[in-house]
Image 1 (spheres, rainbow, N blue to C red):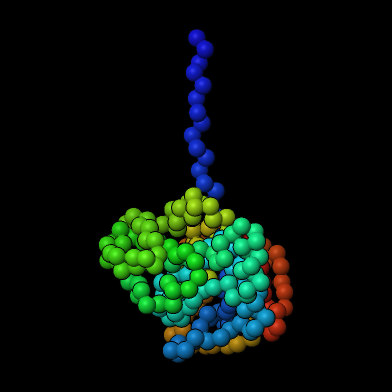
Image 2: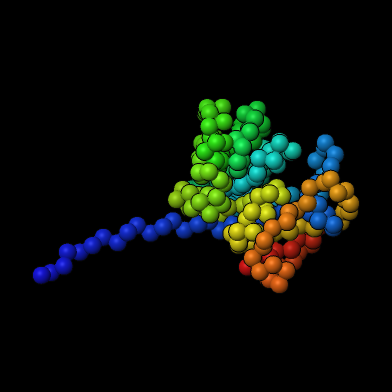
Length: 233
């Protein structure tokens, strides 16, 4: 008998290329402990970050960063936005946040500027949010816990090829601990914070390979008075 042809299963979506982007002080802090946000990057480095945003399909920040900084998280350059449109892309990258608790304020600037927004949360977080963000963002539950591998799979299914992650501490720690970061852009500012109550770039975690693994330094640039180090796997 001639075997019946079979249809291969659909290919799993390719997960996005993940770029972690962070500015730190010389002693490893991303902010101080005051109510006002500490500016670590200069004008030239902020423009560099704007370029990476424009090159990305989606930008992610954690809920704690939204609480602390209330950012808009936009591509600020009109020329870069126009180039995105000319390339057939949305004017702004998709904006994402992650929250286990679902404690998000619909008044934050994040929801009211730019293009599409996504919230990744847990079953309990989605229940707590209810319809609070109706008309502002799509809410996606990842189950009992926030699973970053599942998050990337969902983004891949949406056609996201590059994800830029802008913090904060918990989010960067999760991506590196799960070995899900492809690049790390580390902008080192000539500032010393020295406050044990201030947030650091990373928290304690079981990082793959521990202190014996060395990331590859693939680029080093001076941007104003900031040193930008680019690391890859």
